[in-house]
Image 1 (cartoon, rainbow, N blue to C red):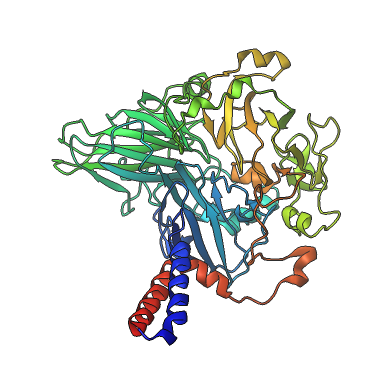
Image 2 (cartoon, rainbow, N blue to C red):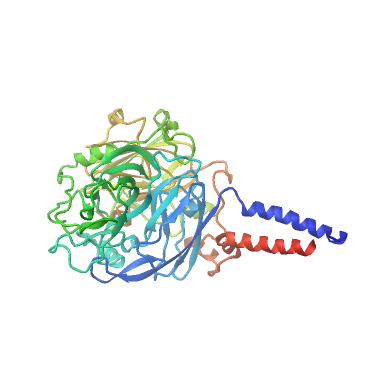
Length: 593
């Protein structure tokens, strides 16, 4: 090699070393492209408009590993604004990516926006869905799986396969029609059915199920054990899940491994996800029913609100027939279901996303710094409109997202005055949020004075479910709390006429949605946000505003016309970029040799 080319060769070597560092970052990237559009489908035998992701209904499963950097480029091909929410993903240090109106401006029609977030220190079963305009009622949802890193063992033998199932109540009317009903003060009425993986029921009963409906069929091998992940992505109906003649060994829920217990069936409430280990230990004389049926309702009136799929052994000798396996026989007594919920405990000896046991966080010995009693009630009329409330406040989404308003010091967007106890006067419509204390430890009591079951969720965190009971919560109720192995999860059910208490460690800076998962009540205002601010601004506790942030409301003038920036292209195609640049450098090295 000529001496005159030595500086150039040295530059190439240094550049290669830096590029290798860039391309072999400690945590890998997982890239996804989502095209969200309408398609026509007939899940209950009637053609209707549904929301698909990449032409699929439900959407594709996101399957990643702890600490992966997830990049999802979302193209909005709907005729209205869109936000995708990654329910249960902590979004550590980045509520900018949460995909709800308190943190993000919506993606306009024909635009695309790229989400980037790290699934830091998480494992488990979750799902994603469109979070605005009642769109989840038309689809757009899919499973989101976070696997353990290989160095972290799972607390059970590796299953033969991993099966994802999404269940949910379903209306033949699409989300825009349902939205109009709610806006006009109407109730949605009884759903038209229940879907299993976007499909209607197997024809188990000729009078209840019309001919020609496509149903879900899951094929398994006899003698093998499968991990079956089930999420209720529906609107407002609790569903009892069961597989005929098979035990459901509960192993994980929403990011926490559980004490392993067998259930013949389990109530899965709206927004909740569970993992079961199911062994195919029955004879193959026939197929078996997979059932998801409505709970906490008058079953004679809701008989059609039943999803039925088929579990098919590879050596099965016949079709499933006869009556469905019975649901729990407590139609008007919710005690069975509450006791079942109480039985779900944290496996404190299992490693979660990190090597330390799940129970190493001694939540029961931490001093509570703030207490909020959040009480709901049936919908009420506020300012002439039907609204849902939380502690007497019906939340109004601001035109300028809360986190964006903080970033640009826009005044008057929200109030930090959400009441610690329910208001006693008339309900009001406000953008009122909770002022959380960074590194505080919050106790939240969810009191359900509505006539139906509710599920509550808090973005950015999991919380410890430490108690639930019927009646009104009082200070003395703390004596019943489970302070050792209460399950840590991202949703919790609250029975009508009952309360549930949760504890949450506020260690994640950002603005985080606290809401009912019942889509109709959420749409009508039963939500708030918890604002958690580190008084010492630092990138170590919150990432900067993304370069591709969208602007709206009072900041709309800052929004530039849609243009996919070079930075976004590099982010989405990082692996391809690295390969190309390394190939080019390799060629240059050959030239200089």
